[in-house]
Amino acid sequence: MAVGQDLLNVPFPEMVKSMGVGIAEAQYELDLTSLKIARLMAGYAPEDEEEGTASGERPNLVRIGDDSPDGYSLLELGFTPTFYQFVDTLIEVKMSISMATESERKRSSTTVNASVSGKVGFLSASAKMKVSTVSASFSSKYQYSAEGSSLMRTKLVTVPAPAILEERIRAMLSTEPEPE
Image 1: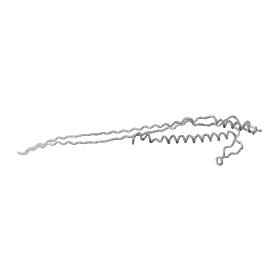
Image 2: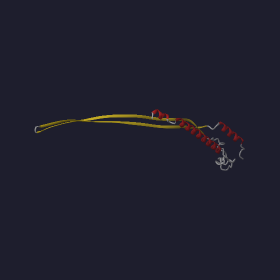
Image 3: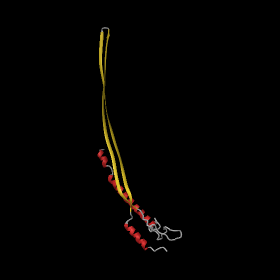
Image 4: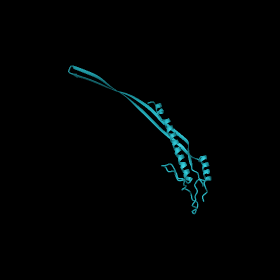
């Protein structure tokens, strides 16, 4: 397999898509949570998760003073819900691919010389011998290493509540009847 092919096999478009969808879904959940907190801060009971409705009563009011039955919502006291937004997102892919080939050839030879001569009576004989051995070997080693890592990082910061929400809160507070 070619080294360049390994780089092409990194699913970068899929990583970008997954991270984008993940951020969008997370942003949606963050916004829903901030809106639920705004509702609680207005003094209303949390929405019923099964039916998606809430009663018009305001049981979650802050009482100031022990003798006063009336209360104020956190919004009426000047608190606002916190909203969050993803601002920086980074995808970093690091890959290290290396390939090495090593070939080795060896040749060795051994030579042995021997000579024999002898005489028996009037007969004589002699012999000489030379023997050589040759050994050849070949070996190849292949090393392949591929290492990779990826890093996905995003930054989450607080942002002010949407201006239209603040306007609606002010309008709601100015039209509510004063506690008796």
